[in-house]
Image (cartoon, rainbow, N blue to C red):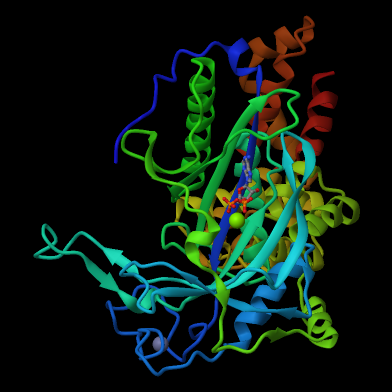
Length: 494
Ligand code: ADP
Ligand code: ZN
Ligand code: MG
């Protein structure tokens, strides 16, 4: 590998602005099945190397693949969630290449007749919505994993773990519709959210269950033809996707500005040096000698099966956001946060169903709950405060039985102890003090102790009023009804 990038740091903004960026993504997701795509081996990450293998996924002669129906179902779910046309007939093909991670010498994939084509998803970038086309979604098998490090003879040997070989994948190819690295970032996060909502994949980039290759080119703004594209691999985080694309765009512009030509090639992102390096010149499809897989029947999807899968889809993130805004009166921002994951959205809706006002619930979840979950490294599923328990607390605050600030303290205790709000309020005597004679008593004491401030107030210093309110709240350990305290002080100070 050679580093063949010109200096890219020196481009002026007006030079960058002459060009338009074009990006298309190819995303692989591992499907959440129990077993592999063509054999009965477990589809599980993290097991000891080469323990989930059999003659089929090791590609031994004389074995035959048997298609796992569940993989078609999950790929169909993904296709429908991405607004694709699912074809009645699709077919597997052999993609031939020679590499140790592929024991058969070919990968079973889909080529001319993919499962689904022609979909789209909507991204929301900088407040603007935009549709990104999805060219195709097909099924294929994953290859084995090369392990280079961590073995006693790693210096001289390469190791291979065949557990991953035969893991079901969906490849999702986008149209070249993105015009900035941030749009690519938004596309990938939106796609991931849809995959998680629909239970198609756990989309864990670190474990490789979501992998993304980025195709990028630039052209002079207004040009009709696309520029020469480069494919960037080894993008194992969302941040690297964006950084690698930003780097490539500037590299292409620098090449063109210096009178050069962008080479069509595959490049690798080098995270240590924050640059891309050339890996190989781009292979052409005919290098793979694709041909129909003779060992598998074509895939047939009946209308009834497809519609059954469509009906089983959950409400998708975009629709949920719209509903949260319309039905619960949330701001687009709050709706975005609360639909981040399906579990969080469900939690919010259960709190509302248990009788808490929607906006209050939205605020408390986003501040008190999410902050504490985050601090304690817990997920919403493991929240020590159930939706019903939070709703009970919010109703106590709403009906003025406790003050908002006491409510926050009660919430902290609920989170630590798992006890209910009413239990804590009763045990610790935190109920709001509405008894006016008790409050009047407290107010008189504060006034007597602070003659200077009384004089200031009487001479027109309205700001001092807050001081009196604060002192009474303090004297009642925050339990006084703030409105009553206000009224009483106004009366006594008048
Ligand atoms: P290939 O023949 O190299 O596989 P495809 O036309 O199948 O290329 O496209 C592969 C991916 O590259 C798709 O995601 C597509 O949107 C994207 N793509 C195609 N042409 C360009 C281009 N000029 N610039 C950026 N991305 C592109
Ligand atoms: Zn197997
Ligand atoms: Mg292609």
